[in-house]
Length: 464
Image (cartoon, rainbow, N blue to C red; front, side, top):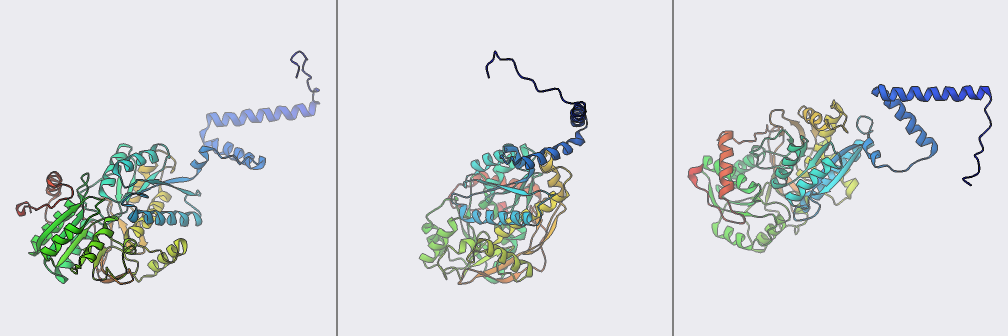
């Protein structure tokens, strides 16, 4: 338009039209006043705005649109040496989220899983946890596998007064207001496994553990085993601690052969499990292994039949003969293929999402609010669920979970056949019997200082 040309104004509206325009103007003023001065009216305005977007066909994606969903952080290793154990945990967590959404979501909203890769590195886990909280605005994080990654994330969720749900069995010796532990504590897995092994396989034990300098999980597990064997009048004939990325197990296998144990008690984790069992098979070791840290998914990566003399101690096996488990396994195979398998950590990851969902449904705060993690955390402590393994319940005092326990023998087809099971779920004890909480804490600190990565470590019997 020529700037020197005077504008052409529209003709003056007729009185009736003028009255309509005035009414519309007054209505806009009234709605604006409600919005500004009465916050509880904002949903009305938002409703009209959303309706307008629908009617005008404006489907542009806005970054804030994802905030209408309930955002759940999933933090596992998708790469690195722990990926073999953690990738399928993500499958289970995603399956649970999909089932929740298919049934209508939570509080009338869909759940959005925000997946992050911890890369098998505790430092990356910490950084990704910070990002999930600060940038992605998740209301809860579910994940971690190693104790080193859990400890790194614990610092982040504690600083932010947030929430981590940890679905992996571990060494205990820890209480945190910002973690709910859905994996097994030592008295729910390690201690009954030692007793069964002592009663059924023999009293001479060789201990092999994955141990990280930031957590000393392997040393802590071994301290529980040694104390129990002393009470049983058993014997530890050797022990070996390896870093998470250990590749050569030939030397330790030769040491095992020389020690001639009745039981090889293993808490080796990740793809080190594959190399450890391959070395045992290659050297012709037939002494039975009882593992507290291998499952059906890792066993599938090993040669058929090479594992059939060995045992697993766990809260869950795919072969459990219950209607709930059969249905769970069928859904997992339908979603991920007929050759997919379930395991203890897969079931725990799946159950963790369902327990979280129950807590969200009861939360006082909006899941998108900064107070949501606290509200969900409180409500989690009341939750119980009829899981594939049986009933699981979260204990308010410790934030740990009642879990089942079974011993299974590995079959030639890679599945695990239950040979013994506890009569009922076991109450968690973060600090095992035989010592006080303070004594266990001091002992763990001393072992942390004395242990060296990738080393033989003779325990001083006087410490126990």
